[in-house]
Amino acid sequence: MTKLAGQVALVTGASRGIGRAVALALADDGAHVAVNYRSRADEAQAVVEEIEKAGGKAVALAADVADPEQAAALVERARAELGGLHILVNNAGITRDGLIYTMAPTDWLEVMRVNFGGVFNCTQAAMGHFMAERAGVIINISSVMGERAWTGESAYAASKGAINAFTRNCALELARFGVRVNAVLPGFVPTDLVDGLLAKDGGKAIKRRIPLREFATPGQIARVVAFVAGPDADYMTGELLRVDGGAAAVLGTGRPD
Amino acid sequence: MTDTAAFPAAIQEAVADALGLDETEVTPLSTLIGDLGAESIDLLDILFRIERKTGVKIQASDIGNHIQGGIPDSEFGDENEIITPVGLAQLKKAMPQIDTEELAGKLPADQVMSLFTVQNLVDLAVLRATATVDA
Ligand SMILES: NC(=O)c1ccc[n+]([C@@H]2O[C@H](COP(=O)([O-])OP(=O)(O)OC[C@H]3O[C@@H](n4cnc5c(N)ncnc54)[C@H](OP(=O)(O)O)[C@@H]3O)[C@@H](O)[C@H]2O)c1
Image 1 (spheres, each protein chain N blue to C red):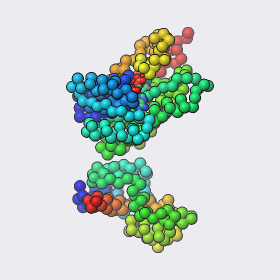
Image 2: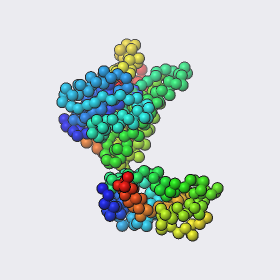
Image 3: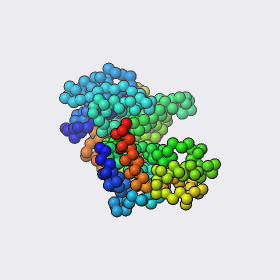
Image 4: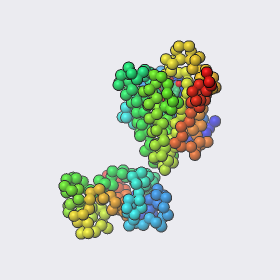
């Protein structure tokens, strides 16, 4: 497909998991992709090579998106190396699971710094370019946890709730500049991030709570991101799109037992 | 591009487009905030449109600095935040249309921006364009 031909995308946290799948999907649609990572250079380089092998173009760029200066430098390098920027996918994220009662203040702050801070910093760094072009798309990878509670996920959920609120505000402030801002909210996707949640029984018990009865693959999230990034979604902004197998649609367990 | 002759029309169009107004509603003497009701986000929109049309980059903060002409706050306004005679003389340079006698002793500092007109914006853009060339 060539829906994103001529476009340059920056995907944060694209060395692994969902970000990696998003980078591949956007490249598959014809975009040139900046593959951001924090520390795993080899894995980011592997994503670049996979894209190049398929005939695409990509570069791996290190940056800690929680740091405003590094985020700004990341955006400038992506633009310099790939000749512009049209799509920003704020995907980098971490979690620190734990009960509120015992959580160290540094834990929630670190989650906030990376998850919400990363979105804010990269958005602020890229938005001027989008505004000047009167074009551009920002997609924030949030989570259904930003809308529903899960024991031990308070810090993570709060950071995603912040991203959801920010997405709406950012959409409003950028709409008049022709820039779209949306969030994609995955449910459960087996990646390194959720190792802890799935450790007990391979996630069997959680799966029973999901109407579609399966976890998402990173690729299933990525296809939705590619749709939102592309021309088929060009009237969509300020939207929070759940991709969760129906999990958050259900009231309680969805049945009397 | 430094064909500054085209600036007035381009900037008038930028202002009208950003504010969703008819071009006839935007005259050189219209004040952006006062007459046309521009808010800060409108101003940002106008400045980005001007950059696209003319290549001249003006930051929102540039307007305030241009108006104040480098005069420190303490000399620009008195203890009640009313613009001083020194301040008014500077304002007259950036905004020649203002009546300094009429405003003497009664212009609050936070009202200064409301006097800024479309023509003043054109002048600033022209100044910027020529300054960039000189540099
Ligand atoms: N997995 C799920 O079930 C799930 C569900 C809902 C939402 N999400 C969201 O989806 C996004 C991706 O999650 P994932 O499951 O793919 O996680 P993952 O497999 O743990 O990958 C995280 C990615 O983010 C990068 N990263 C972490 N901190 C960073 C920082 N400060 N600066 C730059 N990059 C950083 C990592 O880079 P390195 O490789 O260099 O460490 C890695 O590429 C996150 O926002 C997450 O909250 C995931």
